[in-house]
Length: 208
Length: 217
Image (tube, rainbow over all chains, first blue to last red):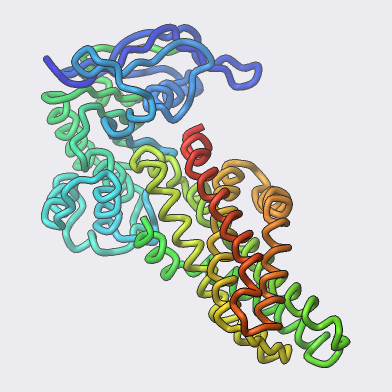
C-alpha cells in the first residue's frame, strides 16, 4: 500500500537529567493504527511530538517515507494532521472561521459547506458553528481541534488522547474518523482509554 | 494570516489597547510637563524629534510582542506551527505589526505635533521617514517577538533584546524626523531615509532566513 510511513529508530528524549524516552523504535504505516500506551509521564505525548516534528529527539532518528523517498523535516507538516491536549484553536474566532483559517494556511478548498459538514460529522451542530470558540465547552473545543487536524485529509494522523472531554457520541464520531483515516493513511494514537486502545493494530507500550 | 490577526485583534483589542494607552499616556505626560514652551528654541529640533520617537518606540515595545506571545499563551502556537508555512506566519505577523504601528502613528503624530507645537515643514519627508521607520521597527519587533515568545518573562526579554537592535534605527529615525521638520526639501531627508531603508532591508532579509529556524526550533 502506498502513502506516507513514519519510521523511528532508537528514540531517546531527555529533559535535563531526566530521560523520558529511552531507545523507542517502531513505525507508523499506512492502513494501520499504532496505539501508544503507558502510565502518566512515560512519554506518550513526547513521542507523538517527536513524530510530528514539534520536538527534536536527544538521540535516534525519525524518517518520513513517501513511496521510498524520504521527506525532509521542514515538509513533514504538510503531510500531517495533529490533535493534542496542548494544542488549541483560536477562541476569538468561531469554529467555521477557525477551519476557514486553517484550510487557507494549508492551501486547501475552504468552501463553507465542506467545513460545516466536517464539523457536523464530528458532532458540532450547525447552530453552534458560528459562535466564538471561547464560548464552547471543552468537548466542543475538542471537536474543532479534531476537525482542524483532518481538514486537509492528511496521509498521517497523530492523535493524543483524542476522546478526552468528549461524550459517548463524540467518542463514536472520533472512532469513525480514525476508521476512515486508517483506510487511506497512517494513524498513531496516544492514549490510556481502553476504548481507544481497541482501535490499534499495533501497540507501543511505554514505561516509567 | 493577516486577516486572522486583524479579526482576532478587533475582537480582543489587547495589542491595540496596550499600544494606544501607552502612547496616549506618555504623550499627555510629555505634553503636560514639557509642552511647546519649556524647551529652548535651539534645542527644539533635536528634542522634539527624539521625544516623538521615544513615545512611538516604547509604545511599540508595549504591544508588538503580543503577535507571538499570545499564540504561546493561548496554546495555539503549536497548532499554527504544524499547519502553516513559516514565511506565511512571519509575513502575516509582520504586516499586522506594521498596520498597528501605522495606525498608532496616524493617531499619535498629529496629536504630538499639535500638543507640542512642533511645526514640520517637510511633510512628505516626515511621512516617508514614518513609513520606512515603521517597516524597519515592525520587522525588528516581529522577529524578536518570535524569539522571546517561548521564554518565561518574555516581556522583559523583549525590551532587553529589541532596544540594542533598534538603537541605530532609532538614531537615524530621529535624524530623519529632525531633517524633515527643518526643511521642505526632500533631499534633506534622503541620507537618513537611505539609512532607514537599508536597515529595514537588512533586518527583513535576516528575518526571512532566521524566522523558519526560530519558529521550528
